Image (cartoon, rainbow over all chains, first blue to last red; front, top):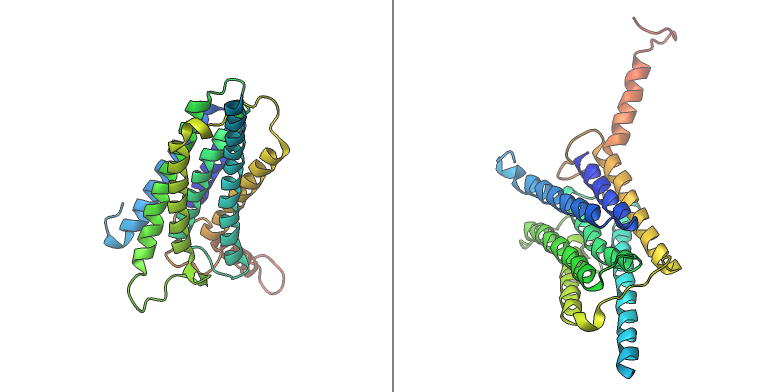
Amino acid sequence: MVAAFIFIVILATFVSIRRDQRRRSLILFASSMLFVTLLFLHHATDTLGLSF
Amino acid sequence: MNDQIESTRWERLSFALLHVWVLGVCFVVIGAFLVQFVGRELPCPLCLLQRMAMLLAAMGPMFIIRRAMSVDSRPAADFSTGFGMSILASVLGLAISGRQTLLHILPGDPGYGGAVFGLHLYTWAFIVFIVVILVSGLTLSAGSMMVVGTRGGRPAAWSRITGGVLGVVIAGNVVSALFESGTDWFLPDNPTNYQLIEEFREFLETRSSAVDPSGQKAN
């Protein structure tokens, strides 16, 4: 569900770029990057038992 | 006069390159879809993260293409913002694909999934991210020549097609990720089936077992 949610945020970024909403597209892009980084950290540390 | 014609040529080349870039990324993700559906190999969590980073890397050129059509476009600023977006997403993608490559680097390790042209998909992704960073760096270095000027009016047909293909690829990933994860928060390390279909099947079985053989509903 988290992965699908991030893809939805990426889709929203794409839609805001298409609608020429400069500021919103940059905010959504930054949010997507943050979510992808957090999900990556979760999967990278999962086996270490860090409960990230 | 000659300088002006030369600059317009570079601008056109740069604008065409942005479309090729977006379509190239879409082509790679469509290739991953083919491996998923035709080769029946479900993407692991790290594979999905690489797809996300790849699609985010395509947002930069898409941003420049769209801003070039805008009435309030600022060519130099939009150009650097777009390539900045691509570089950031590619660095993140490089970290993800690099980690997956290192997970399977020991001799004798068969790797995750099948190989395409001798390399696994995560190794291809690593190469794609390096190429994106190199192309971004080279294009930014030649910024004065390559910057895309304002092109007012409606986007050209090929710009709309490029955007449409990217939109469809992202939407396809939303559906695919939803089917793969079902109602679970996170994907398992080695997914073997589409969780949403399994959950729906279980739901149907629970419903049918709640009905007794005589056809009457149980209390």
